[in-house]
Image (cartoon, rainbow, N blue to C red; front, side, top):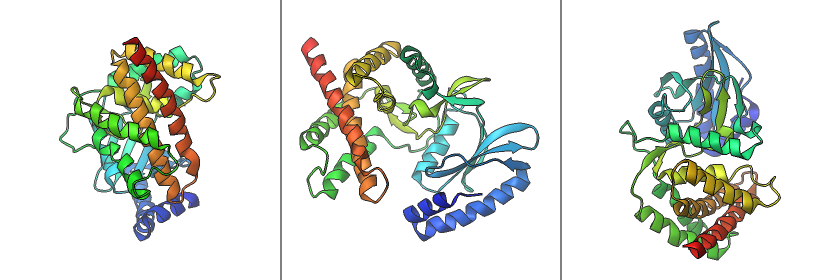
Length: 310
């Protein structure tokens, strides 16, 4: 049932432990099938977790997610439980030690990509985000925006103090701006961490609902940026779209426009650093950093506009 390319990816990432994990998952799938009377469908397009649609007995459609035992899956596990009932997909059952979660299957499950009207898209995003954000309920040690920002430092280490393919002046600006933002943060929330079009799905029973949280602690403005990095190339003048998005989201969610665009610049550079990191290690899309740089330059333009109006 586990696709060969997913097996290969996990073995490449984790070596012998990855191969051992795949073997354990195959045994776990058989065990869960017997325990819950599951009928398995075809696995979804897989990234770093094994995810497959299932039917529990003849009664309920669900999704089974099995994750490699690392911090990322642990954070998602806790975030799914922490967000429960607040705009997030419902957890039906779970077993942390065995590394699996049974989730409600959202039907029809169409993503926000399917909505073409940008005003409607922004209204949906804002509604879901507002339902999600809250103070952490559990004592789990989630990562923070500050810990994520260290990805820029890893870029410096990789290139012995240089910035690799990312323009030096942009990296320097992010290195100055990120600490300033983090040092003046006042109201921190549990954030989704990857709240973009593909992670917001429509359900007939519960409306627009978020899936696949990363779980991170930070200011609400930060959780809007990954959305900004998606679905912008189809616009003739992407800067106009970015300007419209930031102003609208700031208004709908009562956020700081200035902090929103500055976080946008910093996260765009961080995203570019992550792409370099992944590409340098042999993954596809080595030039994915270019998207982050393009967005950073547009956010930089918005920052200059904002300074002129202050």
